[in-house]
Structures are given as structure tokens and as C-alpha cells.
Image (cartoon, rainbow, N blue to C red; front, side, top):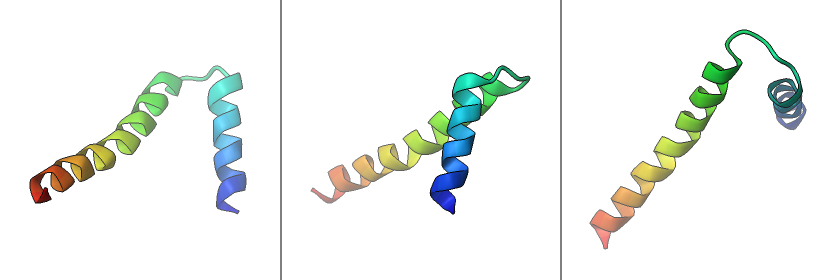
Length: 47
């Protein structure tokens, strides 16, 4: 079910033009970037 909803959202962001599209894409990018960045810092601190 989650994969299906993600596929629908990906289709909407890639094919449709709507108000708030750029903001939504930037939000998704930032949400995906920061946890990985923080994990790298934590691993570096542990090493």
C-alpha cells in the first residue's frame, strides 16, 4: 500500500504542474537528506 501511494505521489510530482510543487519537492529532498547527514556525523564521532 505504501509503495502504491509513493508511486502516485511520484507521478504527480513528475507529470503534473500545480501550486506548491517546488516547495513539496524541496521538502521531500530536505527530509531525505538530513537523517542521512546526521547518521554520517554520528558514525564519524564513533570512529
